[in-house]
Image: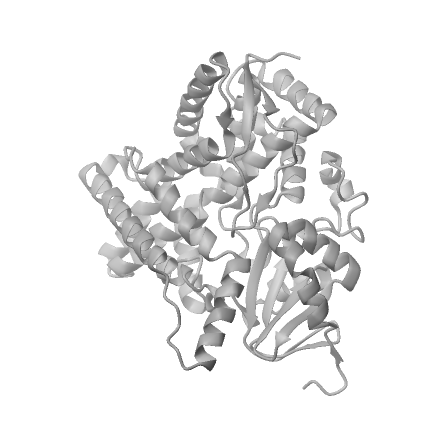
Length: 456
């Protein structure tokens, strides 16, 4: 099949070694520089068994995520995540995924957001009260952590069990084990170590931390199900659908467990990351933040946002979209090619590992003018035309994030409430370094100083 086709440009392994310290120290900005120097479709090969194809161009992204998406598997690169996700919707493929998608998608339609307003408002206002106390005491706020707790509460109480109100810290601490141990950098290093051990006929390394975290999360999922069983009226729509499908013999009890863990893994942290880094952008871009606050004040007039008002705040949506361009919650997508393929006349061998680096794609100057400049107007309908595969914070194709409509609605509700109540200032003048877990986090706590009842 490769005859007459082009080989993907290969970066010399000595060049790769030269770049490794920078990759390790500050991964994401280094990838941007690396692709600018070497190109948008690269074969990174240390050895014949240790190679990765780096993708940074919409043409290749569209082929992998849509045109021939069934040839590019994510299940085969899950590593330690497979124990957490099992055969849930995030990990499954083929007919099983189609069945799960059909079962669960109706529960996440944006039209249902109005049914969740009471919980979203309530939990956000609880956080506002906590932050007001800290603001009055002039205490610094770990915005990233508090937002994660908020979004986890909203996820569990809207989709699983509205009366469950415990173990949130424990859920996050155990999930972070999986995120850290399976980020692309650590995953690739672990893969290299086990390949080396295999060459010495040694057993592969097992990760005890991951095993303990999985047991802890299984216990919490059982608690959530038990709580919902005791209080059927409090059962969330997703859990209700899953339990009904199990009772009808359509899915197993294990499948219910897997789906809940998939929801907890993929259903709140990305939205929390988007909101956190949007607040960071609020602190950094005063002109745009003032326009954002002006829209919020004019439309809401001090009231809590309702569904009909979300559509009346287009700049709020564009501000969020631009924040996710510069700080995409999931910074890379990994795939494995199942069969030989051809992308734009380049030969892609079967079993090739593919890394679509969303962070660098969103900064590719071929598709984004002045890519490091924060400009929400990029997402005006006319300006955004033709960029569907240059901007993929929620992925693309049929495996795009199933919760995108709900996530965007939540962001457009919660951000205005926070802006109504606070002015945000970053505690440190230093630019935060991003820790490249599966979902981006600040390397150090993202501390902010809050001021109550801010008015322009």
